[in-house]
Length: 314
Image 1 (cartoon, rainbow, N blue to C red):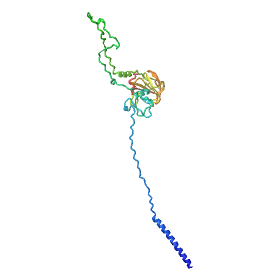
Image 2 (cartoon, rainbow, N blue to C red):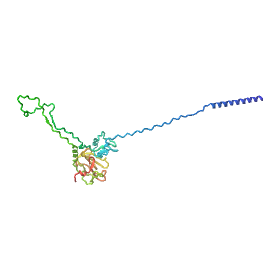
Image 3 (cartoon, helix red, strand yellow):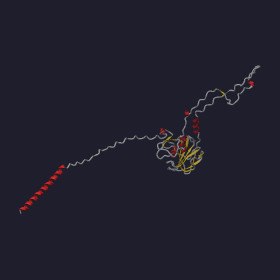
Image 4 (cartoon, rainbow, N blue to C red):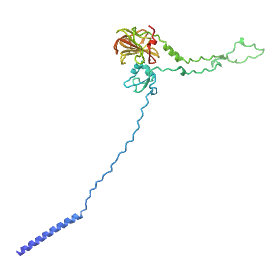
């Protein structure tokens, strides 16, 4: 019995020592363990530099911009074509293309300024080249032989005189050339003004010329009445694409004058056709109008004027 107690005591003592050893080892490992510190590297924020503003490139100046707003020039609007500009101005589109040196008549730009009247050179701008003063000049050609004056005009030779070898060539005075007329363009304009006019219709005048309201004469009649060319000329437009004029004919008489005939029922001519004064070119109607009538305009250098001042008295 005593022996068994001793053995139990020894066992309890050994177990206690084992637990102490385990406890010491645990404490030692905990004390010697280095603390762990977690560090997260944060990259500094990068701010992108503000973009440098780029100055706007000014638009290229369109041809003819210096003439904007001047009489005889037209500024192209959205939807315009060269043909429409010519119709509005009462000109032939081929002439407008030539006056503006357009390489491609099918291309016009919004804001482009086009000349819509013929270019005219003022008389003062015509330079007169000075004529050299009259003088004695030799007129014989280079390969001609010297001309000997007739014997009758020569004084009698003295006896024993020796004939001179090679008489001097004849000299002729040439009168100065007449100066070119400085007013040639003015004469041409006067010729343009010399147009023989007739009335385009036989009806009564319902409304006269009023620059602000009526750019021509309103002549009444019945449907089918003849519409006549007011003077000799060439048709530059025959159609109905110009709003407010209905079936319209425009005749160009020269570089100064053209006439317009609107609201027709039937057109009897076509573009580029040559017409004579008094020739029937249309039949009166009421297209784009509230009643049968002829709206008749005369334009001088593209500007409407009172037709009654040019038409003969009735």
